[in-house]
Structures are given as C-alpha cells and as structure tokens.
Length: 120
Image: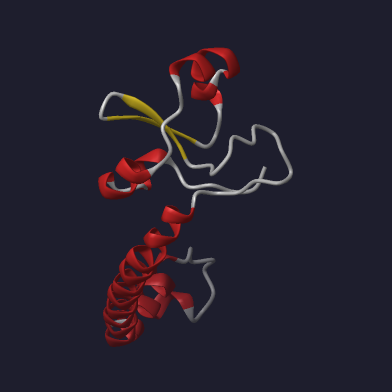
C-alpha cells in the first residue's frame, strides 16, 4: 500500500462526492480497518478508492481526490511563506544578540584557576 491521506484531511465537499460503500460490504470486508476508509458522511460509509482494492497493488484512487491538490498546494505555500518570515526574524534576533550570547557562554564555562580566567 502506498501512502494515503487521513480522513480528517479530506474536506466535506470532497467526502460528499466519494463512493458510498454498501453496508453489507463494510461488514463483510471490514472496511473500517482499511487505510482508505473515509468514515461516515451523511450516514453513509465512504471510500477513497475508485474500486475497492484492499491490499491490492493496483490501487486506483477516486478522481475527485485530485481536487484537493490545489487546495493543499495553496495552504503549503502560505505556510512556507510564514515559516520563512519567522525564520528571518529568528536569524535577525540571533545576529543582534550574537556577541552577548557568546559572552554569556564564556561566563558559563568553569574556571580552572589559570591566570586569564580570574579576570573575566
């Protein structure tokens, strides 16, 4: 089985378009343990697969899941922008206080009683 997204990451609009699994099949195959099971939506069990492929090498996901790609691409780009902005602030702060932090590290070092350690 290849990687998959979790049910909680699939939007309600997409879940409503996913294939409904008949209750008999859910009970027979144990779909609730399948990694492609989306849970119940509108009181009907849903699946991410186009055709059920429990432990099958020919997994075919339902085409409507492709609609999530631009949604998560946009979210990823926004998160990346925010990450880069925070990283810039962090590195700037480190640069501003680099000398002080270096001095604090030196002060934390244990003095071994040498001629230089007593003055500083």
